[in-house]
Image (tube, rainbow, N blue to C red; front, side, top):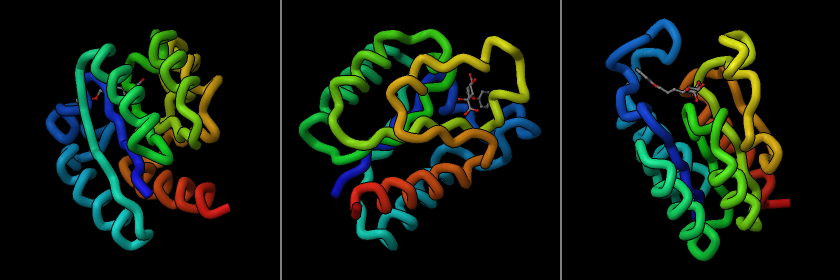
Length: 144
Ligand code: CA2
């Protein structure tokens, strides 16, 4: 089974700025830990990042045929993108929305998510460990 792990704008800067919010790990570090976790769970992953909304939409469309589950940290598009919500609604499998930080303890504009309306679960504030926890949750949901 294949899981798409999609990362949105600015997450390519992870580990380079604002470590007090997002930690010290780079996105490559997170990808490596996801690879290890996925191997332990018997899952395949495609770990992707884009700063472009349409690219994220295209990958969600691709996942309709290529993946059984999606983990998405849409970054700031979480709070603005009806297009990503609509794309996720066209995906049949489980979707986990993920945020490294606890968005509810931050500015009020981060409290609303368009994606939550489609997500089967929302992970926020678990740091980069959230990616491994989300993989474990998808493994459980797909085994049921
Ligand atoms: O907590 C999260 O994972 C977020 O999805 C991250 C987004 C933010 O807009 C969301 O409200 C919450 C921002 C990602 C930017 O990541 C950076 C990492 C290091 C340096 C600069 C930006």
